Length: 127
Image 1 (cartoon, helix red, strand yellow):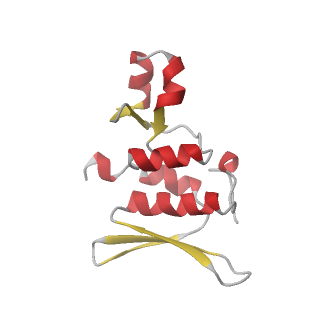
Image 2 (cartoon, helix red, strand yellow):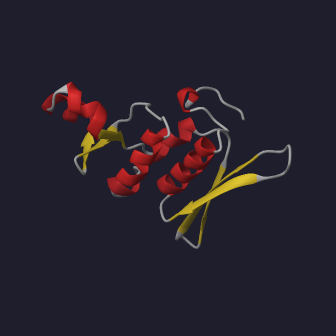
Image 3 (cartoon, one colour):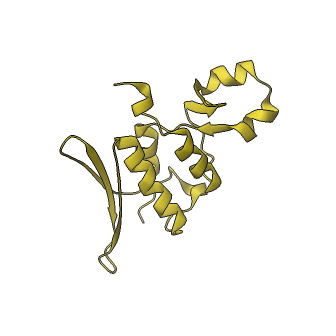
């Protein structure tokens, strides 16, 4: 599978950064190009990196960040990520053409609704 289908888009990476997600990632978007984080740090000074790089989280990295959820694929075309909670029977659903974007969409909704705190991502959450 092509790497670009395994990491979030630059647009999604920017959105997550705006929502306060600053967890490091193996890959980053820098100047519209996908880089290995270590490689970009070797070639550029630290000042612009914080401002102009966006973590390109992978499917696995998002899986570690998200609290319990389910993910399915329909008709081999659309990925659906769902998070349910039981107090009122409601939940959140995200769909996209790639698994990584479906997971990212779910994470964005959880952050926007203040259900999870971006600082605590990846810790033992069970919300």
